[in-house]
Length: 381
Image (tube, rainbow, N blue to C red; front, side, top):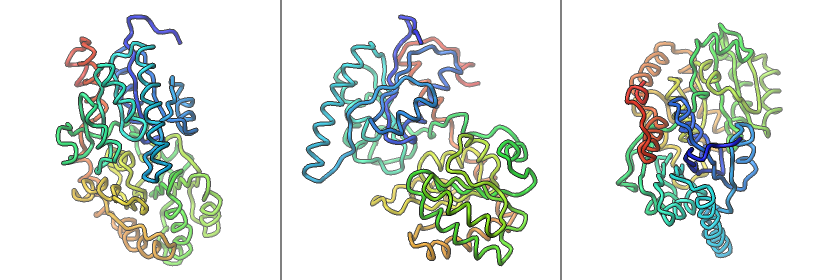
């Protein structure tokens, strides 16, 4: 695609997972909605998932050599070498494209890019997405001209707090019945959404496969259906469990209509990554959050805290062992599935406390640093 010479180039930096790429996509969406013409370049990691995401979205990508931080002697040396090389690659990209600004969404790809942006003297904002800023964010925040955070944090004192930037495709805009029909579900059945995900959701998947064998004996799923995204690894295990016990619904490895998935859901069980929490909040879906249990800083627990503290969700502990997780899930899940009043109270709490759209705030930042003239009515529509 050819780009007019007067069109400013913006580098959107973040990779290693969809959680670092999709917030940048959301900002680009808002710019497009406002009629702002830019040459968008996505700076990502060399992981295959990054290339796959960009190809599906037809976005222009540049992979740099950055690696995650490792404290092992050889790993630390490799990290340092990769950091310096990735910094140089990004600096060369800035010069080659005459980039006018950079927006980074944290993580190991952002660090060397921020340093290169600082060297080049262009406006470069860092967005912290988790309740506990990672080591890379804390270390490289010094190179950012502007700081934003989806959570209040004392570790990034100068950061402006914003909502997590969300793509329009993860926000539902139709009725629950319409959303269910579009996904091949029964429009009139209450729906339990299980978001095991593609990475790190195995303990949730396995617990649900075991739970249904007990729950059906007590009528837990009477009047309900499931929509369960498992990732590739546990798909067959979970599908067989639901089929064997006659529980209606769909079991899929992935879903490319997450807005409709959230829109179909009456209740959800999921991890507590920053993006997942933000999506459940934006769609007002009462959730049982089971934070990923292998993070030392337990940042996913803190990600869910604002929703839980407002009464919009419940926080459970992933106990890793299947039987322990079934015991952890059974009571709270039964409570939400059988208590309509409780669900309505949680939905109201979510709707009444939704944060402002972070993607719009970041689009405004880019418009400002680029010196573009956009009418206030367009920005705030």
